[in-house]
Length: 137
Image (cartoon, rainbow, N blue to C red; front, side, top):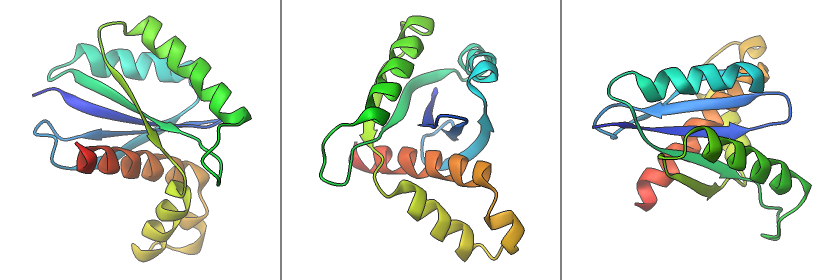
């Protein structure tokens, strides 16, 4: 069964998570700059078991409205759909995922320096987005 790929889009980095082939567990995969992300995603799509869908965090504001960040993510989603036209893209509300990621990292017992590592937060947030999507299905 193809995997699901979760993407937490940021201005500097994009956190990536993926499911296991049975789509039971979402796990952080890595954090990439946009220029290197395309080759990583292409590899994931082309290697077995492939990719069933992309799940992208949709950055709504506190009140549920869309803002400047939403426009940046919409542009990213457009690029994603152009590069991988046959793979569905799902948007999911990403409010509070960074806070949940920080809490999860704190609870893991990592040292303070490792907990502050922004790339760790990005890829953990992507895994949380993916987990939330799987729970909603």
